[in-house]
Amino acid sequence: MPAVQCHIGSSDIKLRNLGMVVAETLTTTLDPKGPKLQFEFEKDEEVYDLLSYLEVPEDTSTQTQEEITRSENKDIEQGTCKTTHNPTNLTDDQNTKHNIQTEIELDSDDDLEPYDMSNDVKKTKVKNPKYIRDCMEGLICSDDAEKVEACLFNAEALIRKSPDGLKEIAAEFSKILLHLQDNFSSHGFDAIRFGAMVALAVECPVEVAGYLSSQFYERNYNLRQRMNILEVLSAAAQELAKPVDKSRVRQPKPVEEIKPSKESDDWREIVEKRIEGKTRRFIKGRTQPEPAQVANRFAPVAGHFFFPLLKHFDRSQASFDLLGEETVVLRKLIFSLGIILYSALHAPLATRMCVNLLEFIWVLRYHSDSCIRQALLYATSMIILVLPPFGILTDLQDVMLETKSWLQETIDKDKDTECKRMALQALMLFENTIQKGFKLSLNDAGK
Image (cartoon, rainbow, N blue to C red; front, side, top):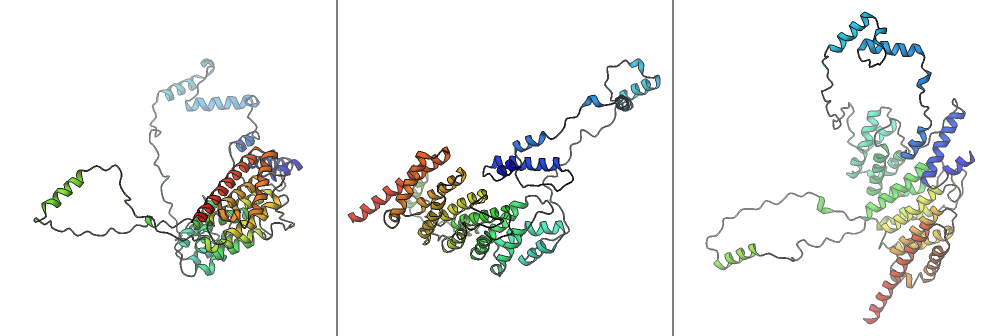
């Protein structure tokens, strides 16, 4: 069992799935009547292959003579027996019955194809909720599977409409969705719940991000819920950083008034129109106006997503030790911090966020797990991309030079090939940023 525990605690997905399968199988085999372990993991081909070894193949040699005789008599009565034994062993009545039934052509419905019902809409007696509070009450108080599914499936659409009073209940709604369990095995439950939580974080970023980030280090949460918090914050940050595409909004086409043509048009104008219509142009100018500048919606709220996640990473609890055995959550946290930081590109808080993340990376840069070191190198690349070139050359020159030395050391001494590749990539980004900063400073000096 200690080996199984090491596999389950590994950050490698394949090793972790292997440990979960073995743990479930061992507990069921050693104590069939006792409590069974049930892990939530994705079953791929390798997992199905492992589970197939638990099925004992049937041994046809163990069939008794009576079972063989009974099956043969049943086939004879149905007229479907295909045997090579001597037909003289059968009685006359059986031969006659067998011959008659084989000659009769039965009307069969096998040639009728069933209707395709895959796209049919399931009719339910439950009406879809029209208000946010009705949706929340349906998710909390109902034991009816249809009502829960109707509320869950319509939650994101109701949230995206941004109704009045949504900010007042956004944190409470996030709490309901975070603790919601799939008690009725609803189809696509995880994806639908995730979409609703992201929609809440996008529509009410301050309230939802403040609640989720404050709950990340609290007790009485399992690993799956902590991972959900990080995934929701990362996805919401990316969506808020994207500009709103107004071109997708359908607008009614203006009605053009048809004016009667004037017969007294100038002949020169008529000739020019004909020439213009028959002229081929290989290079045309800009046919559409430049896109309008849109403010980054994530910039004003970036701090609510980022700084609370760095507060208590070194705090050890009885149920949650981020720097100890919870390497899977630590890796996810580092990647999420990198995504949130890059979403805050050009934000006023970007430089401060980079400094805090560098301090976090500096504590863990020599972590024993290669997956953690890969996540740290990814976050370092995000810092180099977000920091302005003049910031690297002036305010953060000493810190970035130490970071460069660490990257070079990783390339030379790290045993993991992927870590070396990511360190080399980060070092190239660093050199390109330095060169860009020198060019900008020379241009400013020339002016």
